[in-house]
Length: 276
Image 1 (tube, helix red, strand yellow):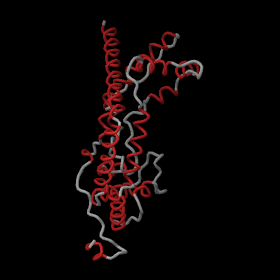
Image 2 (cartoon, helix red, strand yellow):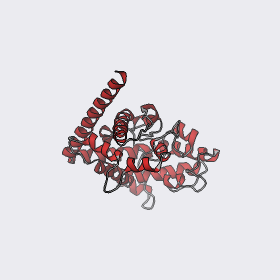
Image 3 (spheres, helix red, strand yellow):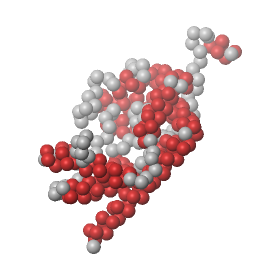
Image 4 (cartoon, helix red, strand yellow):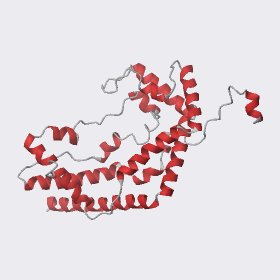
């Protein structure tokens, strides 16, 4: 009370930046323990591909979907480095606000788009007749414990949004804006900086100006304590969700483990056949 009055009723002293995380590598959240790693996504993806190939072969169609490579998946996965906007200084210097691109454009989506109409029909199916993609998913999921993955995705979004409204975060946004103003860039919040019409994030080209602004944005996020404050609020909310929904999270963990075990067995069997 005394300190606030001394600073003036109209302009109270801003709270000090939250101390905590100091690098992108430390942005590990409670929900991350329940999400798939690039290695796990590669196992699940490649097993799914094998089942799709088998299903299509039964219909007289030979296909060769591109293999899922864990290194490629890791390279294009920003993890939590973009959860609070750009926070990786080196990435901002290289790519501005643009996301890193995969080293090869040969993704499952582009591969499927080149297939014949008949092949795509068998692959995707219809509302009345499931395609091989859906059938492969059902095979991997058969018998495993049910889990609500969309619910986890929703909670992941909600904790981020709710954390953004925390007083420590809104105070840090003001410090961030002041920092950016001193660097010669006037934005009320990080969302305005990345949404600046000068950047075309749908085009691969990155201007030097975009790189400069994104770098200043990132540096100000760390120096203002915005990353630390947002992360702390976000992590606290996620811990509370896990505490209040233990059964849901237990189901997610078992579901993933069972699907991974089935996928690994399937791939081992396939590789055994190929070697034999």
